[in-house]
Length: 254
Ligand code: PXL
Image (tube, rainbow, N blue to C red; front, side, top):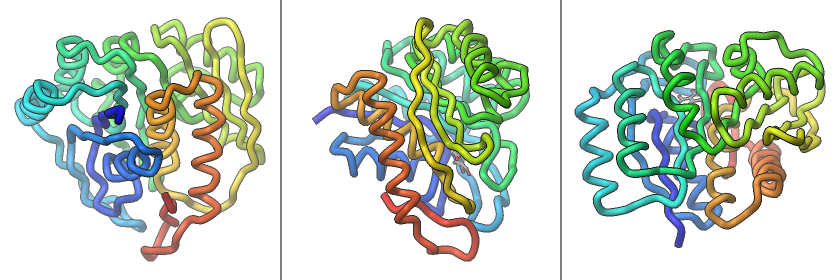
């Protein structure tokens, strides 16, 4: 069984963060492992607090886990503090994690900032260059590429700007754009489009589910374009079957 590693924050609702990633890995037949960067106190209605773990705590998780279990692919999610980011960069290099997918988590679905400004700068300069793929939604792509996205032409331009930061492929998820929710994959040569319909309502954890599904499909040997379609389809089904478990946002059914 292939092993995937998620590096991110804990979401006690189980709807996003490492809890969601582990569920997705499990559902897709990939063995999931996790290194936690921060704890959060949140539910489906409110985001109360972030408790970042120290670099030492994160470093020890990497050292002890990776000396035993090496992942075939890994993903990063929420990385709040600069020291967490530096520690992740160090360990990605040290353990030669090469199938690295970055979900550039900037804001929670409730609007809470999940990355500090200095951390975002270092994410762009130090972590994105080490990645195989980056999976950004439109607001994230706009921040990374420093431009407004409102058309397919501007999506391609933003993807090109992000590609210059060093990832092999750039995925921009169109869920936040107009009434369509097509996803775009740019590999430096071609722009592939995965057409999609938009679902109304507030669904928690769709970004986490998409990026962890993409990691799982890479583990299963899918090519990039096939992994894009499969991940999109996986998230679509999780949204269609979403559950009203809490008093606020819907949680995805994995
Ligand atoms: O969906 C982004 C995300 C990632 N990681 C954690 C989160 C969230 C959104 O709330 O809480 C831990």
